[in-house]
Image (cartoon, rainbow, N blue to C red):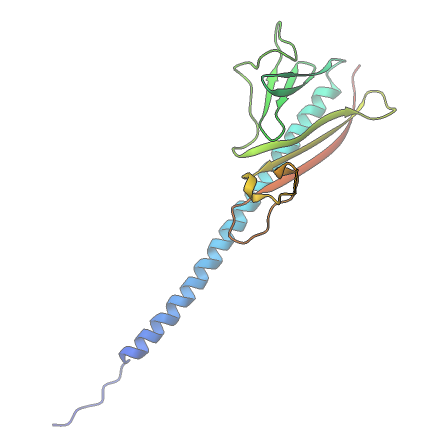
Length: 190
């Protein structure tokens, strides 16, 4: 009895083909995960930039059209900046709240129940400085710096606030972002 030669793959050939195919799929999945991570980083940073610009714009408008009331103080561990009827409460390395002063409230009164927290979760205020320009009346500089991410995601220098530095660039780490904005603001209304 003669055996006919059958065309087909041997088990070894099939195992090699499956190994190569699995390796190719693994490379594609790693690429897709990296693209997703980069996309999420871009979305997070864009959102933080947008919120930073909105806060800068809001402070600018409050100052430009507020009249003469500018006050600073502290309440419940927060530093405060009051411009007109708006109060900005912030903790360096912590949160930012925006509140409206009503009735008998002043810059040092407790926050109202309607205080807004405009920053996303895991975001912190590093700089919120509203200071007059030297030698110029009614012109102020607003410097803000916001970060998003955990403290261990930032390069840390000895004796420094961990958020003062840039993000670590290690592959595979969660994302952090640092956004700094400076504005010079002149009063429009007296």
